[in-house]
Image 1 (cartoon, chains in turn yellow, red):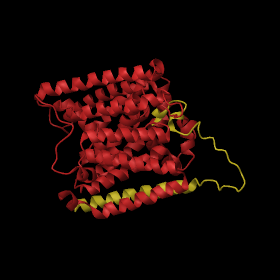
Image 2 (cartoon, chains in turn yellow, purple):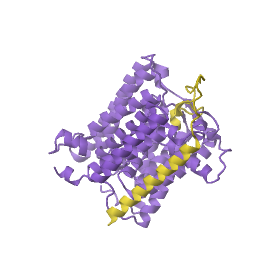
Image 3 (cartoon, each protein chain N blue to C red):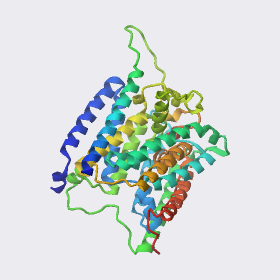
Image 4 (cartoon, rainbow over the protein chains, first blue to last red):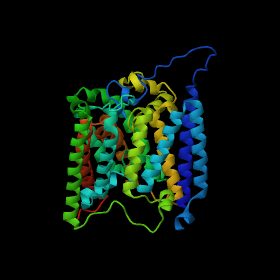
Length: 60
Length: 394
């Protein structure tokens, strides 16, 4: 019985996490690319947790 | 055959479909890199669960019983990862660029790692351990994870104050010595540590635990259904970590995402995070203002949980029977809070602070190891005082 209950709890937790991620993601929709526009994205400078000022990756 | 008979087929199917769908979504929505990092997370989760590769239990076993198999495997992991990382971080291949996990050697790391080492004995899981046991369906570890997130979020609020305390600054042996002398020096230190651990175990027990346990199963059966040997896990974890360094540009990290999730949740329920200095610049600001799925540590953490879930279902171990008592709940909450707060102060958990730090040639990783181990010794004593464990037999 507990095994079954635990499966339901885990399934619910994964479901809630998926919904939360989906809500967060849809609040941050990527800009629609414009035809003939050249977009240069310079994300090298802050592309990873390692580029944080106070600490590199270590801000993990 | 037994392993196949107990495989949880419905969970395996759901997870595989989920992994494929989410990988395709990431590739479509972001880039192939994000999908690959998620899949690396899957590999890490499978490895961690099939090998039961954790720091908490192995450190406690060494402190209590002087059995050092797990710790020796971790030393091998540190050695192999250093061999892979040092040439790359030392610019031996100028065309390949990656960032080391460098952090200041200071009070913040000292206190944070101590608190983390203590907390992981209450939580019964470290950074990686919490994720893979959650994936394994251990409901108590969901509580640990929830409070890990709370602790990490509070840690981000307090970190600037901790960083104002004395520190020696960032010290990289790769930068100061050159990658080859630094690597050789580090390997010598790790070898000495390995043999000291082995000697202590040999002296107490008259033998040492083997890192490759014999099994009646074939290699293929073990690879799919587990259990893996610790040596397999060491090789796989080092290679996945190296792949992360190449793809993401930084070593494998875990707990940055926890602070991010907590801060996003706090903001979502109306909390004001505009005064939290941690989130006002650099990668942190970018992560907070972007989709959570744009953060590489989040993707890899999701991958670890799902990978462990898949491995547990394949092994027939998913969501084991377990009754959570009141005491379990309290230790889970305390452990999670301490680990989250400690990880933030220490610039990462046992993965982002200890493994990534030492494998990057940063001295803060060694300080993490010492302080974290002392924290574990205190945690083991407290477990006895609170009657979680029996007293240590002489």
